Length: 156
Image (cartoon, rainbow, N blue to C red; front, side, top):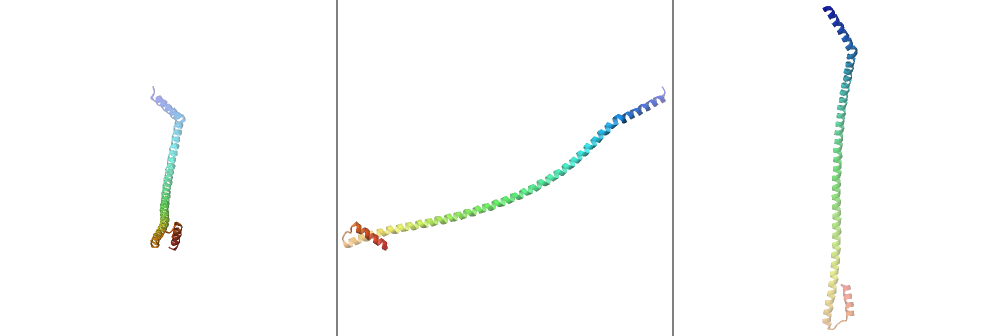
């Protein structure tokens, strides 16, 4: 065997192998690497968009939370105002009810006083008639007695 022929055979075999790799193996590898490169770039872009969307969502959430707190503060203030208003209305109603009860009690006292006066008048008349009978030493009939009592009651 000749070393030159072997070397020439190896060079030709290597050249065929390189040509075969460049023709059939290298293009799918390059395509796979390009596809992988595109997927990685898309993934990085998607990650950047996701980060921006996350920041926007966090800002919106913060804004909404602030609005909710403001709304809650407004609602609490309105509730406090309404509670104060209800308390004031209750106080007014209680005052009015107290005044009405005092007026009713005064009217009832007035009526009781009038009834007591009338009873006292009729008792005074009866006592006066009894004293007059004793003074006159005669009895007055019931009809005359009633007329006298009414006349005295009218005078008193």
